Image 1 (cartoon, rainbow, N blue to C red):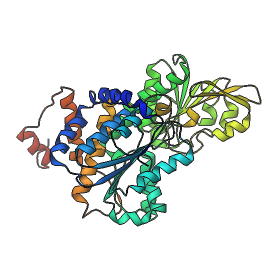
Image 2: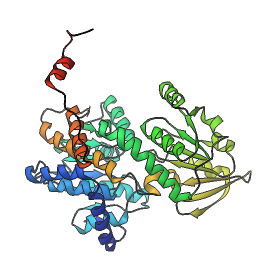
Image 3: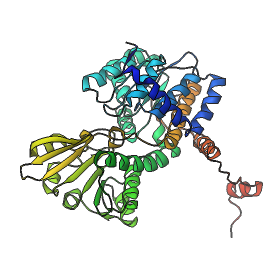
Image 4: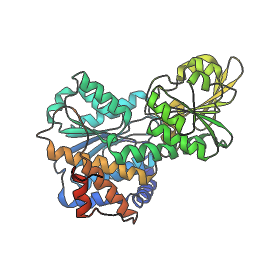
Length: 417
């Protein structure tokens, strides 16, 4: 199966979208230029399970410029941009993705990538890695390593390592400062609001937004919601993050209490059933539920269905549930990533940074494959510096350089008061 996409005729539109993305991904294009000369992936197959977006298309072509054969499947049933998938497939790149995938197709497409016997894996959520470990362990001796894009996936990898289940080295790309400080914070903040707006066209000003989780993603959502005039409540289980939220000026309270006040709810934790049946029973009429965490388990959608007498789609990506009490609750994008299901995901400028990290992590794996062990690694700090420098250059920004005296002072302990 060379490809499985919704409509190959959409390829021309996909080409235009990727061209537009490239215009805003200068840092990644600089990496592509170097890869095209050095061919670090010559003879290697890179298997990917990522959101198939226009930005991902730019990453795919960057890795191909470096000599790789690239095979890609989606990492979420609702996040694929069908025109981009069509463009990649028409270029001869094995592509398995369409928006609205069934669970059966989702895993069939993951297995289609595995059938190409990748030497390097790139994952967003760890489904490709876990599928290889659970059902295709015979391929592991030929795999040099892999990269993981998101917090949820890294948590799974850490659990695998703790269980001695991880059998090839993985790079935690999400740990890059140029990833989580920008992608998670700026990207998730903007794209989540974008997704909610596209799904509902609701006014944020004057509403109460409940943000579950105050990690980098939750912080970005809270800041953007407040910037649009909303009152923001934060819920947390981590004492330090809860304290940060309080000192950032947000109300902090348990979800059971926040449920009574919220107009719009956004989960950003990576956890399970963060919004559960007891919370839904407390919600006001018209409450809107959305999620920007990787998996669709943060909102108990099955529980919401059990509480309801009927449901209907009132707008694309917006389903109205009528509860037995006659109150209505609206669930966006089936509880999946609202920023990718109802919108287009993160802006290209942000994904340029993240995908520089993915591309350079693949190169790092190839260079260090002989010495790497089956554990979770972080990239050296100089890689972050390289990515940030490329982005600053693209933005036309210059910064200072430390003088010899300043370097000597910074590295010495002798000089004090």
